[in-house]
Image 1 (cartoon, helix red, strand yellow):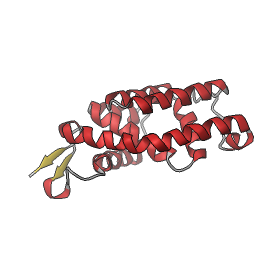
Image 2: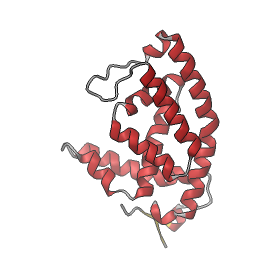
Image 3: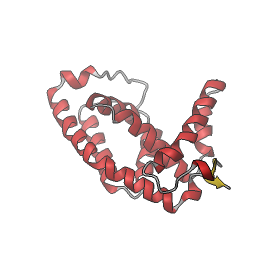
Image 4: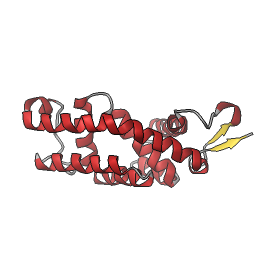
Length: 176
């Protein structure tokens, strides 16, 4: 998908390059979701994106949900894992950005969720945020995973920003 931005509106050297490239994508996504009621509109939107835009989109959607708290980290990870296409796309995202530590974190999250028999489809998805509070072992494992996440994500964002800077054409087109 060609995203055009004005040269005066875009600073290639900013520390939030990731966000600057994500904002137009999420705006388009939200407009389409509000206008269209067809099943498959999400898939069509995603298919129109470049490989880089897909990786960026998946990272930000996941990150923006899980970064709020330990409970959100747990619940949104379980929700994403219950959608095999989204979970696979998330893994592909970290492969695309060459982010082995975050990819390993996702695999650990998946192992923990499977160990506690979390659903791998939305069909039987009834996970609540309270489950983390009620299960002390699950809570302890996710506390550890969340600490890992908090240590990893600043480096991930830096990697993504550097990648975008070197491959800008994969994400946006700057007009004079």
